[in-house]
Each structure stands twice: as C-alpha cells, then as structure tokens.
Length: 256
Image (cartoon, rainbow, N blue to C red):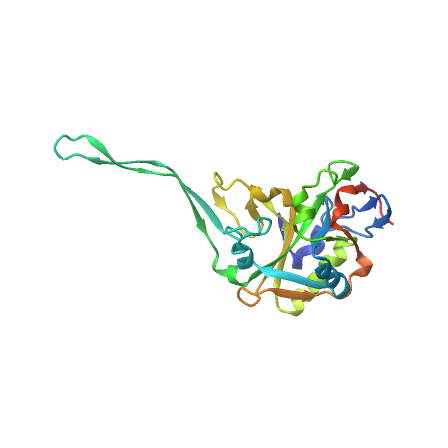
C-alpha cells in the first residue's frame, strides 16, 4: 500500500512507539505516527547522513540509476519501477501436414517473462528507508537484522523519531518544487511467477531483506538525482553507527 502525501492527514494513526538500546538513551516518537507498524531507519555513508540531519538534504536518486547500478547487489535492480509483468507460457508449436493431415512439431516455445516500463520512469526519483516492523509484538529486536542492510549501505544509521513531522517536511518541500510525491511500503513478489500490475512500490522478493519504505517523487529532471531540502532534522532524528543496529530493540509505548 502507498499513499499520496496530499491525502496524508486521513491515514495518520494515534499509535506511537519508542526505541531503546543498551548504552544509548531512549528515543521517543511524539504525537501521531504515519505508519503505526513501522519505525523509519535510514542507512548511509556517514558524510551523507550528516548532511541529511544537519541540512535536511534528502537525496533522491533516479529510478534509472538503480536500473543500471552494476556491481552493487544491494542497489542494482534492472526491473526497478517496472509497470506491468506478463508471463508468456511455454508450449509446442505444431503445423498440420497437408498430405497426412497429422500435426507435427515445428518448435518448442519456452516460458518468458515480459516487462513493461512506464514512460514516466525518466522523471521518477526515490528515497529509501528500512522499515522496522513493530506491530507483531510488544518488543521487536533487530538481533536478526540481515547483515546486508547494516553492512551494505554505509556506516551510519539515522532513526526518524517523529515520522509525521518528517513526512510533512517532505510534503512541503516537494510542493514548493512543484513535485508530486507518494510514500509507502514496498511489496515483494516472485517475478518468475507473478503476472499483473507492478509499479514503483513492487520489487522482486530477492530484495525482501531490505524491508523497504520509500518516497517516490514525480516530475524532476530526466534521469538525474533530486535533492529536497527539509531543514535541520536534529530534533526529530538520532544518529548511530550502523554496526550497532543488531543491538537495537523497539518497544510499544505511549511516547512522551
């Protein structure tokens, strides 16, 4: 499911959570939470995360960047943003013999997956975060977090303490630039069998370990990065080393 940021007030929840970690102070999420079942975490290089927090620099790479990012198994996805997926079934092509009237095999048609890419992909950009699912139990530990997440995207992690405010800042910055932005959870499917509608919030289940939440912006310059400036985020974020991610736990609570 994804949401148009222009309609966000109607889907906000009153539920809140807080984060605790050994050797670190508690981090509280005040007010309403946009996605009650997730905590937002951004992994990245320390210098990039510093600019993200200090200046609110929200760097959104183009969809085409991820489609051609060869050599980076965490980011490269040649089917990123595909609009439709069709499964062409296998079979045998036969032709009727005019003399005998019997059908003889001409060729074997192998199964194929056909991809449709939207024309708008050239002006689509994204900002990705890890979504910690917290609705299943009172306490959620990241001890089993896939090492490709905290080891593959950079040495720093930024936790968004107030996701409602963060989303509102994104919305205002995008609107000031004349951009349309959507936000939601990525759904993972098996593209070897999946048939039907896909879009910017559907990816191969090979990437399911990323448990991704993303913002998608429409209307930027073709195939170039987009920067939204949100202003200083230090009051709604906390920055930790990515190496500490597996020692985090998230507990349900009223916040303060």
